[in-house]
Length: 207
Image 1 (cartoon, rainbow, N blue to C red):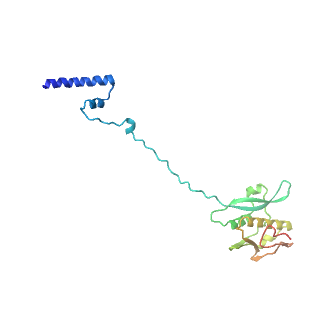
Image 2: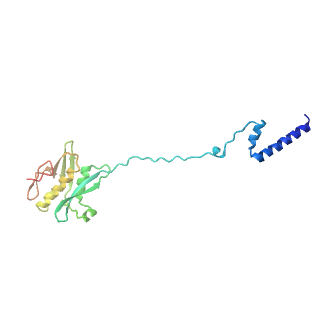
Image 3: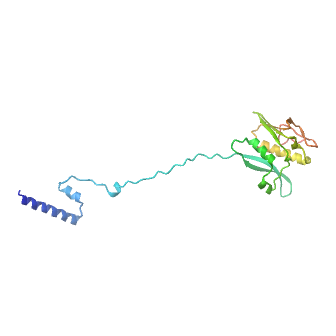
């Protein structure tokens, strides 16, 4: 075949190529593949070649938040009929504090401003000092200064004793609780001599 003939054939192929492309909108690589001139080439579509970056959600540690332990302190108040009642208030125990010791200290401090605004008060003399709290596996000794028993009449001494008993029992680990004054266990308290049955209980002041 002469060079001239080859040129004619090449021109015909080129014209055929553009004719087919315009008429049938056939992709170039399909046409060329159909005539065996080049191997079929696979192209990635726009979506396939696109890399989608998915950000992994940041994992925030969800450790349990420990609830703070609460101590219950007993003060006094008046109901709507002006009858005396024991008013229970709660206080959050600071980390590392012993529950019973914290409760007794708060009892001696008396009600705070908010509690006073609701009518709470205490019959425990402000001069009373906590000399110590001794705990064993079976019992607890609460040692106050002797100021605890002075001032006020029989009703006042009775009320302060019940404040102590209720507060101690509700914040202890079911141990036997004893009251000491100035280092000595007491079985009688106050100027008029209220008898105390020990270990302390809700019935310790009953004759």
